[in-house]
Length: 206
Image: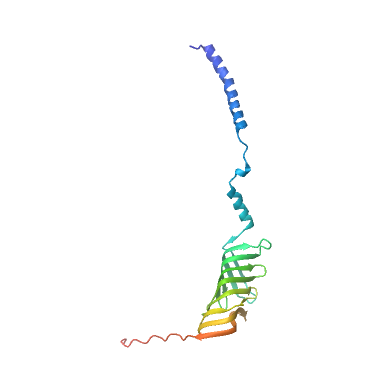
């Protein structure tokens, strides 16, 4: 049996020995621990940051304005990538352009470029032009200015018109006297398709 005096000496000794032992263990951990290697970091983190720094893009950008003649335009896209040298120039995907005023029209294209400072566009890849007057046209390229509303298809155009199927060597979508209009050139072929006759009245009807 340990007396009160022995128990007191044991407790006093433990108060000194235990902290010393704890410090010794901590020192051992720091001495044995391996210095971290920066190359062991997850590699995809640096790659992702690098890609975002060099390939910035905007999601669903939108540019709205009005031409000199008063036609309002609303340009939207699925994605846009600014030019690193001039962020006002952007490469765009899945473009949708609406023109409203006297002579409404919509233009869609798979890709293109937009200069927001000069308000010019270049559209490529199955360009579609549809107007409220009944034209549904397709071209490979459409380029020009939204400031003056002058968009030109330098190559062939095909589609339908209110009078029938239409083909032309070139086309211009322009603003004249405050209204948007289509001008065809380079040889225009129009295959007239007469409208269907009205349904005959029902003879059995009183």
